[in-house]
Length: 131
Image (cartoon, rainbow, N blue to C red; front, side):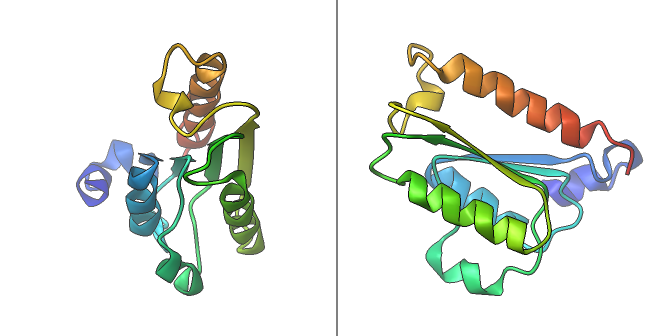
């Protein structure tokens, strides 16, 4: 899909990838060393363990995490942020204390709307830049 979108001149460098939970693992793996992705947003999930050693480049990265996530604990998000920063790219991490693994998809979760707004703001800030 990224290659298809980048084939159109108005989209080049303006493609964002979002992954949630296990989908975050797929999004992360698909974004490794891809300079044609303008933003990567991972929610409560990260890289498949065997992929961490081969990462040389990541797109601008924003991580959203439930502070009470027991499936993918916040320590995973902190590790991913440090990896991205160590590669020289921008990386930010928002941890929503008291929120469980699925809070981002649960509109009744008290901080879900804040997280949605932060996600949208991240994509707008990264993808509205001229390539």
